[in-house]
Amino acid sequence: MPADTWHSGRAAAPGLAAGPLFEMPEASAGRRMQGSAEQESEALRAALGRAIDDITILQQATSTDAAEILEFQVAMLSDDALAEPAMEQIAHGMAAEAAWREAMDAQIAGYASSSDEYFRARAGDLADMRDRVLDHLLGTADVVPPPGAIVLATDLAPSRFLAWDWSAGGGVALKGGSPTSHVAMLARARRVPMVVGLTLPARLPEKAGAATVLLDGAQGRVNLAPEAAEIAEFERRRAGELAAAAHWESFLHRPASTGSGERVLTQVNVADPAELDHLDPGICDGIGLVRTEFLFHDRAGLPDEDSQFAVYRRILDWAAGRPVTIRTLDAGGDKPIRGLTGESESNPFLGVRGIRLSLARTEVFRIQLRALARAAALGPLKVMLPMVTIPEEVSDTALLLRDEIAALGKAGIDCREPDLGIMVEVPAAALAVERFPAAFFSIGSNDLTQYVTAAARDITAVAALNDSANPAVLELIERVARFGRHTGREVSLCGDAGGDPAMIPLLLERGVRNLSMAPAMLARAKAVIAGWSGPLPS
Image (cartoon, rainbow, N blue to C red; front, side, top):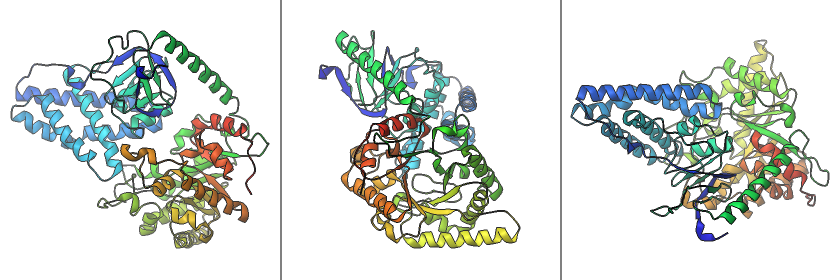
């Protein structure tokens, strides 16, 4: 293909899409006549109300992965304090749209400059809210791309993405954005191809979008003016991908094994039990990671023992006798929780997070340990500690757990001591894994890669360095897998690398035989495993 017809960006959601180009208008595209201060205030209040209605409808119709994003937006828009600066400007004679934009831009800038990645990510949500309200003020709220279109925009709000019907295909091409943004996460979950960070000419080619635009989400590029031969070649590739996807699905309900017949366990990661509602437990060997942070984001306060126990019981019921590994609260870093995490750390990723926070707040940790011990009496439950750095963090947790089990027993409450394992995500743990009194190990490839390469995935300038295939990362993974084989202790991997088709052969070569991943990745992962016939590790 002629190289100059393609424009490069960054891959955000894999897949191939072809369709007409739809350029998303900026929120300032509409116009309205300015009224009195009272009329402008009322116009802003009405636009806020309609925006809340829009998002509430979306929240009721969407799945759990998007519900938290939308809940945050409804809460913010419902808070009178958010619009207060704009109302003050309106009272001094400014138009509603200008006052709202100015007030929100100031807040967005504050979030975007935060040292905390969580708050930087929320800047995108604030921009979403700003633009949705502006759309209602300016009459551009009903802009919808045609079915199957390639949407071109500077950035795309999560709520707008969720409001559109992607069943006819299509894709997203963004001049801004990030592969780790909320909208990119949603695109991957819904299998909508997406490219971000596109470098485009000031003026698009005259024939751009006249018939067909090509988007390659895996390679992170877009062709805005393809020739007939390019379109034909692209469609051949797309047909091949569809055939491959059908082939992958044929592996979904089979146990995973290599070409040489060696069994590989494939488990699923769960961020919320609602994800299991429409999932057949027969497709996996169990749950390799349950993230419990979702329990702690309720605005009513921190969860009590009974509410946690009810959720853990529900997950065990779904697993139907398969093993379930529940990670204790991994708060801090990019996951702050109101009333629990601190707000003044200069570098939250190197601060009080994971097990460090739990051991600092034992009054909260003991409640979770009690609920887990009760749930362990109902099925094969294991407990995993995040961000472990020194052996004492494991032994101190074991003492707390046994204290609570003793208290439960004295109260006549059924419970059991679950196996206690650790996440291997801090290089200090990987390098000296033999020092840790853990029943099992689960390699967290995301944080392990970040800490080994000293490169965050959400910072564009260094994102290429954040590579799980880095030899140093793979050497640590192999070290942990070898230790597990020699001591008979289970070793799994539950980071993004576990479901990455390019990483799976590298992990198998280094002795990993237990992979946990997002449910959507299982079929292809099993197909990749079946095609591997490398040597057995020593």
